[in-house]
Length: 297
Ligand code: AMP
Ligand code: MG
Image 1 (cartoon, rainbow, N blue to C red):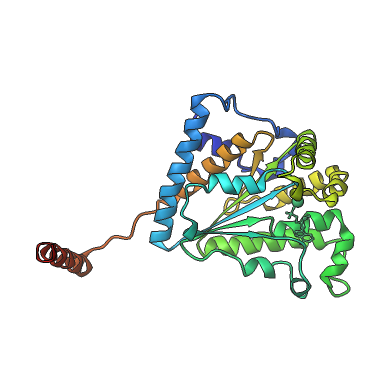
Image 2: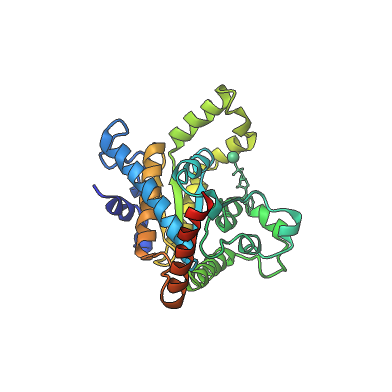
């Protein structure tokens, strides 16, 4: 199986027909972490990503925005660590979005993400994102009062309006040269339980556990409905969602790397060409440096 095939398999190209129940969190496409094939595919993905990022940076035209969403313990942090392991840190920025601050609540919900968008040549990773405003806020509508919307703008149409605003926002970014990929880490209820228990048992992981995680776990079905709606409403060719099976971390990483490689390949990135006068000057500089060598040593 090729990386490109894997990437397409998990991309939501027909959002109207999207149904979360059709996506198995434990899917591995018949691959096994113990076998050489999966290992070499992942390594190949990471190496190709490294090269693509260099070209992205050098050509300085496109920016790449990666949105990561998923329930607690779905593996967002470790995905960033592993998939980006070969990439030059200078070209990547990660932003984690938590509960909005008092200042952020004084603005519209896209304000804080707008300030963190990647510049041309850069990769921006959103660890949670503007989608929280149609996920956690949808599951807890009482949070809306914090958003201080004027009366009449916080009614039952608010979710439809927010999806619409997100689609427009992302289309605008795409038209300005941002490649957008959105990853939903689809972890199962059972696997989340295992990972929470690990967090409680292992001293090195305890700091990650929050009592709030258990409260949110009880609202699992509501969250899944909110995710399903959000993906249906906002997966578009210019900003597609990928539903990554997240029960096996090695496979989540493989699909994420595959999706990035496939999407970046489509940009046909090239190093800037040095031509004409600039090339002549470069050659002149080269000759001068060569001439220097004998003299100095
Ligand atoms: P973590 O990612 O585990 O550090 O947790 C961050 C927390 O911030 C999660 O519980 C999110 O649901 C929450 N959060 C992020 N964005 C928002 C938002 N716009 N409104 C309310 N809660 C949010
Ligand atoms: Mg957490």
